[in-house]
Image (cartoon, rainbow, N blue to C red):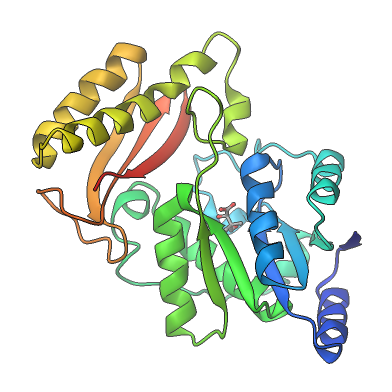
Length: 281
Ligand code: PAF
């Protein structure tokens, strides 16, 4: 596995690969990798000859009161994991490589970013779309793979891919969960052994929603109330940011569960902001 740290070297490598007729799969990450990330690398391998994983903690997608400065890092561990998943190239640029002095050009998807995570985290998606479009321009992938856990991010980036005309196949891979159901996330590291069991409350809420829909309930207001009860029963101190029901593709919000409705939620559990989602019908 080759490690590349500069944009110039990455571009030269891409040019060589393209000249050899190789297709490229990209898995963008912010590092501190877990099995969820590795499943994205494996998925990319199924669709491309060469897989590039990027590791870059992107400052522009963090709000002023968010965890940019404390975001976990483990480059050695990440490289070991990527090697074990048969990744071919890892791109680890510095902040200056991605945002050179004087940088002032941003990419913004206007509508899909107004709700859910976009409403709770102003400017977040502008940072995500800007960095991913830079990665698309530098690496020129044929395929890019993102996780379903960040389903709004996937919808926003898919829209950006269409709008800017990137010739990239867009793949969204399923959420990988811990044995108790907690969605894998680099932020799970923030929990202590005492608080970690309560982090499963989001998954518990989503399972409740799915069970109610299976039993015939379609009112999102009723399901939200039952989910809140379920979440607080597991973690009484949880602060629920939102529970939302939207169309998986258009993100249109709905008051009645319909085929293609996805339930998503964000909550702060012992000071750690978690998100999760599930297609309920
Ligand atoms: O999902 C993430 O880890 C990030 O938002 C991404 C897509 C790597 C952009 O920084």
